[in-house]
Length: 463
Image 1 (tube, rainbow, N blue to C red):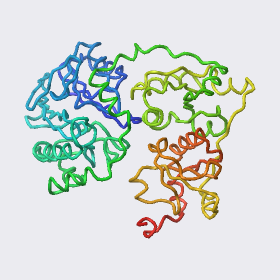
Image 2 (cartoon, rainbow, N blue to C red):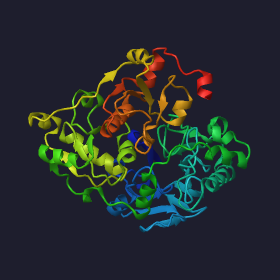
Image 3 (cartoon, rainbow, N blue to C red):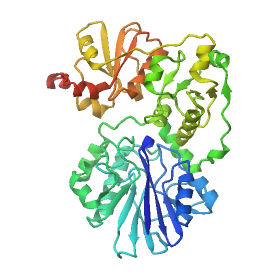
């Protein structure tokens, strides 16, 4: 048996291919499916089977296109109510592929239709070798229980406890664990960076598996849930229907400088995908920077939504193409176009460029003492709770668009996140709604801590 993990860092998403005797199985495919076709061809195999461990909410799956191009069957939990042609995978369903066996565990909890896949490599042993856990069990965490429109978080958390303890944790300790996501995904809270684990290791180290009672587990999993992005339910519904092939998306329209200026005047969303420092040095006024280097697509979906018709601003056609694919991976298909000639064309047309001032943490330390300066921390709740700068205002980036900043629009505002990526997004959003004196903090909280700068005291945190 050949086994391969495909890890898409920008979405913290893991998909898998298993091959035995010329037949291949793909599990939880990303939207652009060429990588699986190329991998199968490299092993002289044909993709005959596709499993979805659940209806993914944070990305758009390529299961429908991959099935169309290969003739493969799609298997998904029988409670999915999927509208594409599929095989409903129920408890105990078993698929034999060559000398490999895949058995389904129904594991509702993260979602009602969630399943896990027990893999046995019969060439080596008659006992299970690995379990592909989808979003049921992560490395160091379990799936969040608030992504259903039919169940409450408490109901799902109870089901998840049952699925873990009555099914997944009955597997031997040496069975390998391969989840659908890693650290950075919004589908959990405390995932570790490792790409695999074992049942035994998770039994000993995973905080959620240390909780003794079902009632306590429900309380813990439903307490302080991270904000659920609005697009999650939209993506889940799109995956229930099955997304169209990427090749069916229309070609992007080149937008002239004059057209962009006109559209910005009527509220268009200009998305600058260049590196943060290039954006800071000069950009189209009113544009927002979400650099391709980070979790670009997820933040674009959170900040703009799936139907915002963004206009892409990039340095090269390669950046435009990359942005298009990555946006499609989260369901942003309706794109107004891209600025022809990029920022350089805007500059050559004699139109003004805006700059985004940036400071280091040494300057921020000096500014901290100035009463006319507000420091805004846009990190997530868990990051804020683990340590923050004294007197900082906490306003997570994913709530920035819906929560007014409680300071005047002409106040000097220094914005920071963990490293400087999210804070640059926030700076652009604040500028766009009228905050004229915004500054980005280079290196963010990591740089502050590395420089040995003081953090908020225990008394301040408690307050």
